[in-house]
Length: 313
Image (cartoon, rainbow, N blue to C red; front, side, top):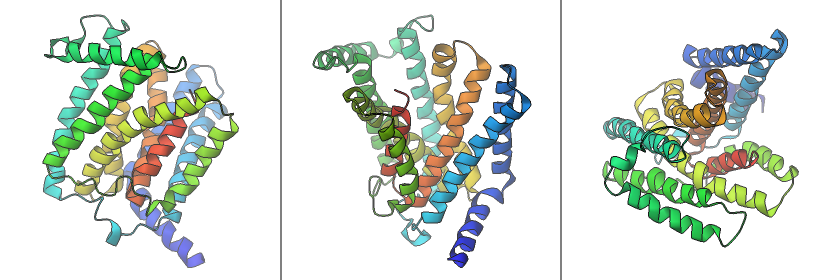
């Protein structure tokens, strides 16, 4: 048992902390959380405690994944991508990310949160597509009062833009998606999955909350995990030998994707609060990406993501 712990601890250190980049990111997170808390009147102790506790929580979670993982290099074939294919895929995902980012700006404009003509109105057929999906979403919403039209719209557009179209594009580029939803080597996800499941169940179960989980599963969780972890992080991990670099490359677009909504809608122009909460997304992204690499399957991390989001609905 002791030799097993030593081996796993060495693997964990070599993967993450042997590279100063990962330690630097954690230090930057603590500093950003401290600055944010100090700006709102917290004491120095409380300000730094918030950041330190966040780092400890996510690092312990990643260590638990490493400790329980039974996914070895010999079983890693479904995760790995040929380097030449991965390089093309990383460039393609950067270009496609720009399109996804414009859909977020367009949505904020259509809600009148941002001024101006919706940016994708100039894309032939896009207005017609949103009109059809809007009518369909309203019809489905009319069946159950707790189902909001916007949620149905997000599920349809999200799976179209984040899952179906990327699946076709990257399949043509040579990506394989075998094992994406397998549970064969998912043992390493059990500690994290159980924690989030207990938090979800102990906060009370209602029909509305169950629907909140289903919605989170179908829209943010499935869509974001497929594109950000299943394509971007997986591509970066197949190109760069240093895991912290791959984690960072996967986390940057994930954080940027949330920035417009955080800055313009949730925090109404407060840059400090927006960045502070995006910092949390960075560490959450690290946890999910590390878990994906250690299990070779997205399914448990989609569930973790959905349970995490459902806690706040």
